[in-house]
Length: 210
Image 1 (cartoon, one colour):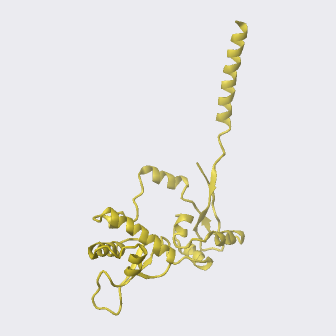
Image 2 (cartoon, one colour):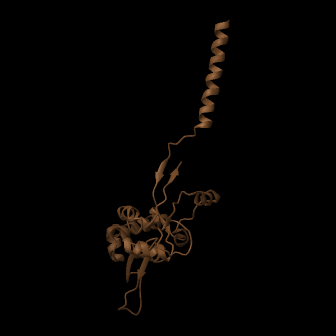
Image 3 (tube, one colour):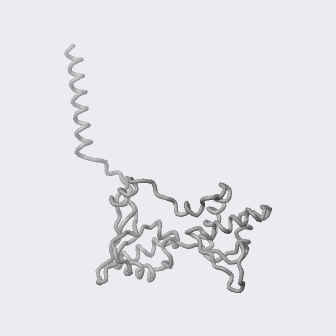
């Protein structure tokens, strides 16, 4: 009997010890994430940086789901057209230059679809926030077949160190610029960010992520 009681007592002590360890040593196994600098002060001091996973941003996400950029413009279109818009935007993003609706239709293999379906796709892309439609300057009247389409990045015009520094220096608040947003128009930006950080021209803040 005494042996059984001793085992029970030892097990209880072990449980208390494990609980104390968990309380006094919280888990540090969190992955760091890289953020783009968010603020470049007018003085020569390094630019500040932020990350989409900072507490402020996290509280905003907890308050409610984010509304997709394309949601208002996609209202009224069928599921097939919406899906094709997504593929079309990805196509424009990867190409990086202006494309006609014919180029897009050929890429999506939609030649055999009727004109009404193609017209809906063209109109949807013209109203998409991540797409810029440029009308044909040589025509007085535009149709769904005219003009060109080009990807509109979340942060436009930033594709090198010079434009990045200019963008940061032009900011008047402390809002952050995430790597994800920057990569929307500049996919290989990380090497430049690291180089500017080593030169102490910007300050990059890396926060731990759950």
